[in-house]
View 1 (cartoon, rainbow, N blue to C red):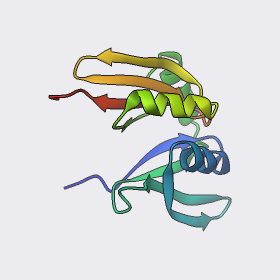
View 2: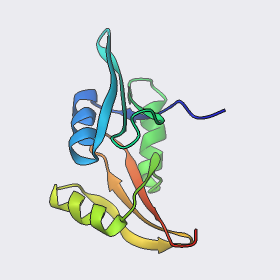
View 3: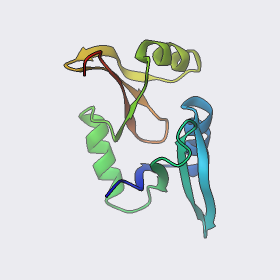
View 4: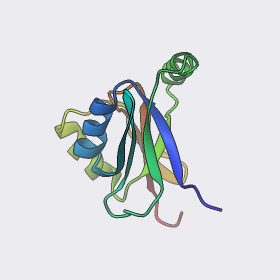
Length: 131
């Protein structure tokens, strides 16, 4: 068994498409119109057949309280692994991405947390050597 699709709820699919592709470097895997929304998935450019991230509309009534509670407590909705956290942090801050947690050591990883501009906190993780 493996994960095929996972999702993050987003306030605006067009804005999420822009952020996740232009800033984070993902590429669109699926973009299928579904009424007023889309089945919009992205994948890492280096893993075109990898797990898809669904940029899912956040209209269900349970989503806003859930996401608000996560953000208020500083809990990321998703975690993405990077090879060089400091380089990604520098690149993303130069693009205007806001971080709620600057790079820091956290056990076997270095981590940072960014605001995806679509209602979520996203954690970036670099595995430390030997992890």
